[in-house]
Image (cartoon, rainbow, N blue to C red; front, side, top):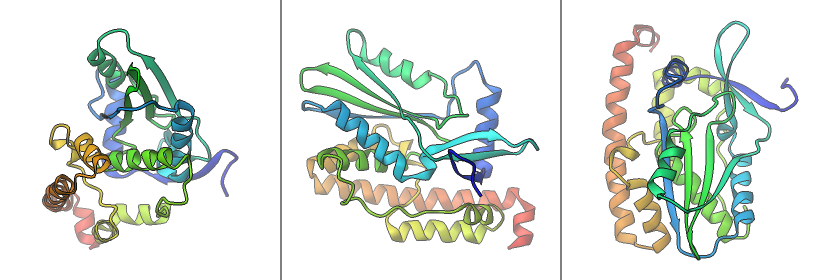
Length: 258
């Protein structure tokens, strides 16, 4: 039974536990786990329609409405909120764009709320930069282009979500099982690969890769998109193989369980 305003309560993965510890420990310094992606829009933008697209995407995906809190026992968990009023900022650029982006990038998140925000920067008539900033505890590098892709799909279809793919729901029982069973983790990753929803932690290893990939998709440049897909697939396989091996080495309990 869920409380009013809540959908569910999920456990944290080991990686999320580490990120939460660092975010709470380094209260004064820069949070290195904050990631930012920008998209240039060369046209007049209907701000209200874009904001509604943001609301729809957050409503579709439970994990984007996760806040990070402690139970009375002290256990840190993800609290999935039923609804979220997205953090939105509008900026008419009057100064240095890099300073605006840096200020947004370094501004701390309150992890008791879903750590994601959106900024629309007006550079000139019919010239905008749309900024998605999130904490890595909520969203990884591969997921950010997917979120932006859904936003642009909704915006271009006047908010109609019927063309978007169905959302795959991963419940807390599957998540909890994945924490103690490495075979489940591997199975989920293979399933995501086959289903086209690959989780690739290395997206931001190549500077500008995420933004360039989205721009190539919007421009219909098939050859560039194919090149990105090949690079991403190779990076996914290699990095995740290394991560799985290191995770098993560091966790004797998981080795004995498997």
